[in-house]
Length: 378
Image (cartoon, rainbow, N blue to C red; front, top):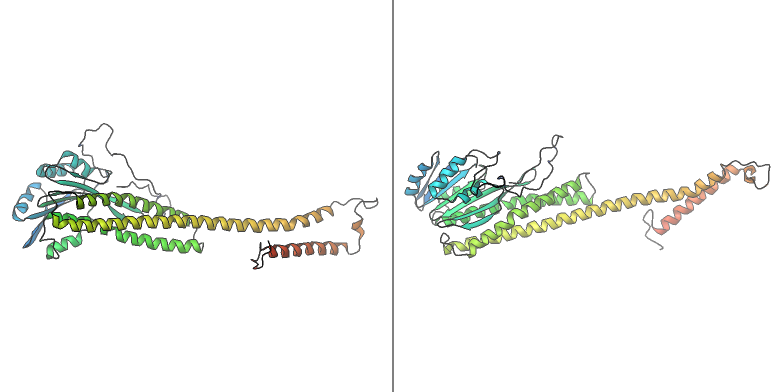
């Protein structure tokens, strides 16, 4: 799971975005297969759902031995593990089903990358579920696929598999007619589909940001664009490996995947491609908004500098005039400010300064520097 920054001291302020942890959570030199869950993990709970063409049964278990009668009674079973804190429970489950120690390490270590691996009598894969609240985050999800059995591991009880359970309970679709490879495909498809609402939310944020950029609204626009770009970057990192994993399942020959189910894996792979393309497209849009915002900011600054420059240029001759006539030389000697004794000299100086100002303003307007004249004489 991506590491998030500590909340800001100001209440209600969005947390600063930190890059996700890419290193292993185990201390250097740890033995391969060491199980060390993150401190924030939830307690482990196990539920089992057995199903077949004629019906289904589901129950919550407290001991792995309680799985045996369910496996014996139904042709297919889904063992769902929620919470990765209780290492002893996960070890007992791994020993019961004969899972490799490295598989259990990959299940518990939520910082591991997404991947798919084939073992002697089962297939193991891990992917990232996307979640978007204040900012985009991921949840580590692992699955073991073997004949007549699917085992899933996830960090939190909230998931996107409610419709799958309802399909099993109601016998809807083909899920109870097929084996567990179809269930595995349905689970992956649900994870992929969960990215669409996230993309829709991001699309709405982009539309809002586009309006704010064009109309120059909000002082935090650039930080919002940056945060959205980071969300899209992390989302791309989460969905891109999943595309390759599903592509492997759709085209490689595995004993646990029937030929009839390959079409469904290929359809899921197509959706992954679409999500990846949308993510890249939205990243380009966000980058374009950033460039547009910077261009607008630069243009606005240029306009401000232009106005200040015009004001400075207008006052330069005026400052020169008042500076000259403010020197107060002795008028009793020749060539020493004889204009000081002009009749109506004060009004004459004001007339000269106003005339210079109006002439400069008219010239600036003719050049198109102020008041946006349509007849620009370059």
